[in-house]
Length: 290
Image 1 (cartoon, rainbow, N blue to C red):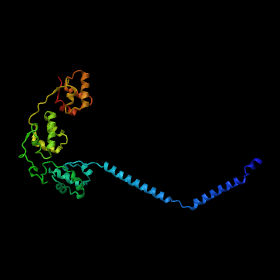
Image 2: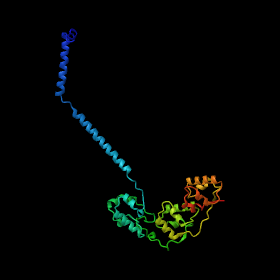
Image 3: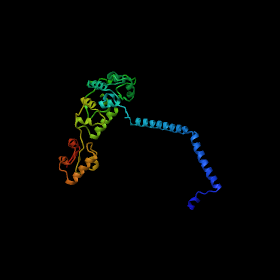
Image 4: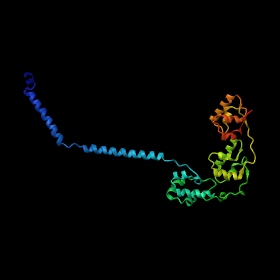
């Protein structure tokens, strides 16, 4: 008991210290309840920061959406498909009017023609018309139709050998510009000449309708002389250079040649796993088994 009491016995200075400590605690408590701390400023600051962050977030989102929008590249409006028209924002009725007009064999040669045919609204037309790309011959410098090329006839275009036509001959066909004509001649050179009329459809970026029109006037009147290579002695590079043979098929041909030692007939190539049978007649134009 004496030990317990001794813990509660304080001298005068100790009692004064305890008193002042209690007084300080009481004053702090009263001050806490009575003094109005300026919390609103910090709250306002936080709110401003949140609003700024939201604006930045919205700005970044807009940029992201812009970047994700499909890009529009220059195109010939005569060849708009259902899907292309949908991407551009055209209605089903507008697309149908264009397709019906094209089925008649006629072509659109100006922005005004496009508007008259499709009945498209001015707002959408102003957005997509800057991307319209008409052939060089379709319009003259004053943006008026060039009537010299509007309705080509057999009298205007002389029937010629497809293997002898020039760029000047080809650009007379509606839908073929100088670049397309050059691509046709470059492809003809790679083939060593057109053997089949339908090889024209293989030219990159040449629309079927335009190719059909070209074949009305330019036909294969003479078969080309193609330099064939011996499949048994040809190098990998020589076989790969054939238009209809890609890298993987070249590997398969050489693997098969190694297995059989010598290919007796080109018909054996059909036995190769994965060989494109539909291309055999084309490939056989350039190979021989000797």
